Structure formats: C-alpha cells, structure tokens
Image (cartoon, rainbow, N blue to C red; front, side, top):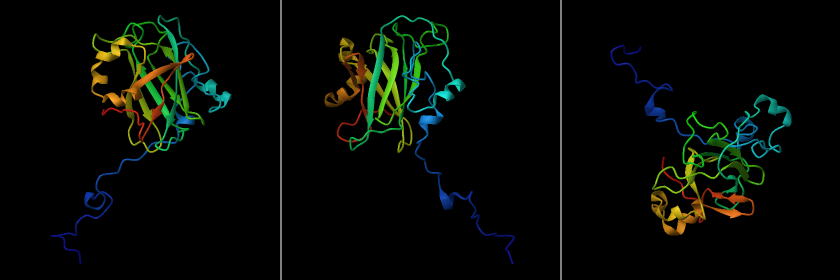
Length: 216
C-alpha cells in the first residue's frame, strides 16, 4: 500500500534532485542556410559580399532580397578576415555580426539616412573567410577611438563571443579606455590592418594568438 501521509518523494523529470539545471548546449552548425540572407553583410549599398553564392542557391534569393539603400556619407570600406580554431584550422561555418556607428559617430536609430543600416551579419565559407561592406565609423564620444563591435557564433561556442575591431592608423587608439584595459602584448588582436583594398581582421577562437574577448 502507498502511504498517503508520507508519500514517496517525487522522482519524475521535474525533480531537480535528479537532473539539476539544464546544461547549456553549443550552437550550430546551421548558419549557412538558416540565418544569413542576400545582402546581410552589406551595411551600405548592394553587393554580392553578403550573398555568398557558394553558400546559398541563387533561387533562394527571392525569399529575402535586400532593401534598396540610398547614398551615405563616409569612407566605404571592406572588412575581411578568417576565423581560426586553436589548432590554426579554419572554421567554415562560423557566423559574425557587427554593429557600428556611422561616419559621424552616430548609431542608427531609424531617424537618419537609410543608406547606412549600422548592423550586419556574415557567414564564413569553406575557406573560413567572412566579409563586410560598410563605412569607416567615426568616434562615438571624445574618449573612444573609432571601432566596430563584433560578435562571433559557432560550433562549440555556448554563448556569443564579443570583441572589438579598431583601425591600425587611428591616432585615437592610444587613449581609448577599452584598449587600455587590454595587456599591451595582446592589443594587436583587436587591430584591423590595411591589406590592399580591404581591412583585414582575423579572429582566433583559442590558443596562443587568441583574440581578446570581453565579458558581456
């Protein structure tokens, strides 16, 4: 008989004594076909940089064509980089997001020029490379150097990794309070370098050359 006064302790799948907190799960790999869209890496204009035709069948573009963008003030730039793991191998299915101010140091709030959208998303290809078409940002305040906020998602990454991109030729870097928090020998992992017509910013997830990531 079951003791109605002192029933057996609960032992179903709601019992925290059995399972505790639900563990975090890694994300992906699903970025190539589930999240990017044509033009998603174009913060200005309309190019094939964000389309990544090697990742998406062209017939899918009709489902999410980019909105037309007007003209925008500022210096157009291309940002390009490769995502590497701890062994120096490329990560072919990571996803990168960026958020930045415009050339005047203003973040998009819906009231300005629609030629600049302020946010973009790019997948890495089989070569581990991602690309963005954007403008060089201005200073958002008197203390911070021009920068771009970068988020990284990928297999084995439980939550997004947050970092920043700065420009190698920017004099204001020397007084930036965020860069000052980073040990001098590691600051180069946050600096994009000019390489021909593009700004190169590689992201290393682990290892000796690991990119500096910030707690969020």
